[in-house]
Image (cartoon, rainbow, N blue to C red; front, side, top):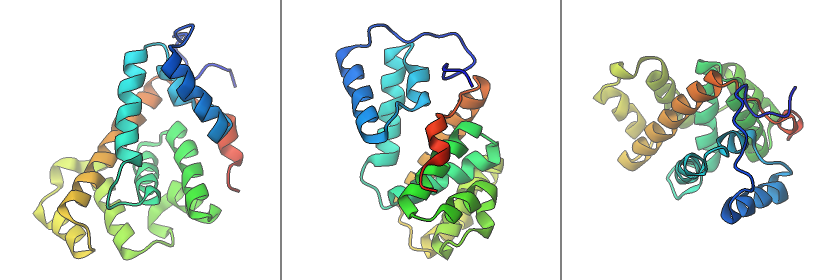
Amino acid sequence: MTDQPTALNLPPVDPLPEDTQKYFDICMEKLGMVPNVLRAYAFDIDKLNAFTAMYNDLMLAESGLTKLEREMIAVAVSAQNKCFYCLVAHGAAVRQLSGDPALGEALVMNYRVAPITARQRSMLDFSVQMTIASSTIEEANRQTLREHGFTDRDIWDIASVASFYNMTNRMASAVDMRPNSEYHALAR
């Protein structure tokens, strides 16, 4: 594997702006690495900032969905799209957040065999339906989520997270985004 985060020759802004460097330093401190998705976007600080703002809003902001549930959506969507980067990175996040390496592996392979609740299964069914046939979603699909305890705001968040990963999966695949090797050994 190369040190480049993608197959494209897009060197990062050098030097990085102070705020960006501080963000990367925090990543190193907390994660032991700067995720390659951030390194990939660092050729254009405005694009990096837009990406991180959307990611932080969807994955870290207050929501009726837990952080683990949002990562589960990322993995289920990425499995449908066969996105190597996101399966490796978010599979690791599921392992870390759940404390269960088998859950991370099951979600990567086939969420339908994962030991999850009926509520989580309905959330992932909806997310996968959005991924493979979004035009087929109807009120009955939203109602199923409500019957499993999701609010309309939760449904918005499920749809937002699934949509974000459908976009990022396509981007990662198109530019051959490469997962950091550190992800492979996390929480095993």
